[in-house]
Length: 215
Ligand SMILES: Nc1nc2c(c(=O)[nH]1)N[C@H]1C(S)=C(S)[C@@H](COP(=O)(O)O)O[C@H]1N2
Ligand SMILES: [Mo]
Image 1 (cartoon, rainbow, N blue to C red):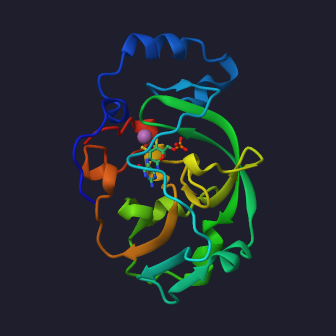
Image 2: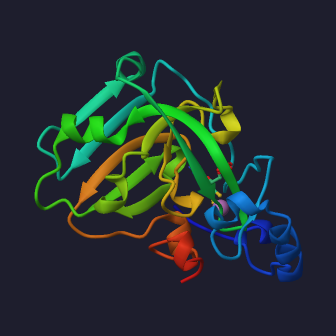
Image 3: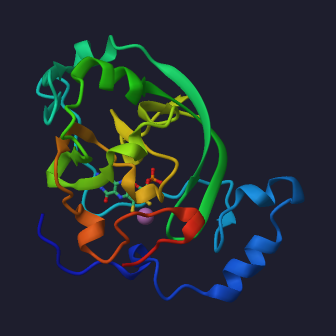
């Protein structure tokens, strides 16, 4: 995906540190330990992405898994929606400094998908592929957590188009930019390949507890 000029608001740079500190100081005591360094809690849910919100056309939508897997799959929309779903409650952390605590997400557990496709012993990285060529990369360990979902619902409601309908990845252990919206597939790979934000200055590993923001 080519990249030209990123809007300043998406860069997470030029942050007003004093403002972040002031917002952070307002975090209620019982949840303060759940908020990673440099983050503050928001009740709202900002919308952030590069480019336009893609249209969802059910008849041409599919979900593919390929690369280092024993059983590659391509599922059309009705078949994808037949997969089992679970609910998980989790905290999400955006590199632009907001954290949203205790969100409930519903979706297909990554564990189920891994059982279906069976990554080979060579598979060490996962590249999430979304509409319009957007990608995000993760080490395979990051998707083994029980709360990694291919989600279609958040806080009891269908995702809106803005937030990634019909399907998005959620990987709460990493900054939220790795949680690819409008997900269309997963590629299992031997070698790492930095994704869209990772090529544009964001940290490859993105652990919010280590403040791995920029690279
Ligand atoms: N397809 C796609 N997914 C994406 C992005 C994007 O640009 N394209 N941006 C990421 C970034 S930077 C963030 S912070 C979150 C924002 O998700 P939200 O809009 O639901 O809050 O989506 C992530 N997923
Ligand atoms: Mo972001």
